[in-house]
Length: 207
Image 1: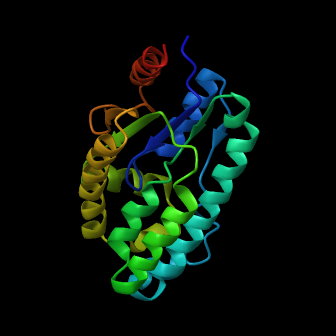
Image 2: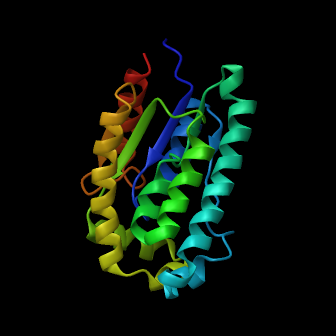
């Protein structure tokens, strides 16, 4: 089997990234890295007032993900051991480009590239693509109080941003394999056969 050291699961808010990454971690017996979300002290304030708290929110996420990836690289990737993550660091630019403006966005871009350009990047990405209806249903199902204030318009724009970002990433990093999962048609939580199909596709890509 060809060694695949770093797999990431990506998609918009509510797509099911952490759930799928956790399931695949158990299936493949790979360690899983999960992003810090609810620990972000600016999250509640951001969804109530995006303009005032966007920079603090994005910087907290960027710095924490940078530290996580440094640790994961040292513990696993640099040792030739596989790992699966429920995010790709590129998501910071997806969100930053949407929530930041003017000089704050320019500064954020610079800091992003300084911190991440030499970090290990996933060689396989599982991209969960889903409609607004599906996303809203999954967000409601998990019941995070701070997500009650998320605007459907913001989520729809984020879905479109993700599509554009994955296309850009495929062009910028042609060696990265992106497997797109239809989140509307495939329910890997409730339907075991659907999950088995995803796992089988991933294993084939790793050969």
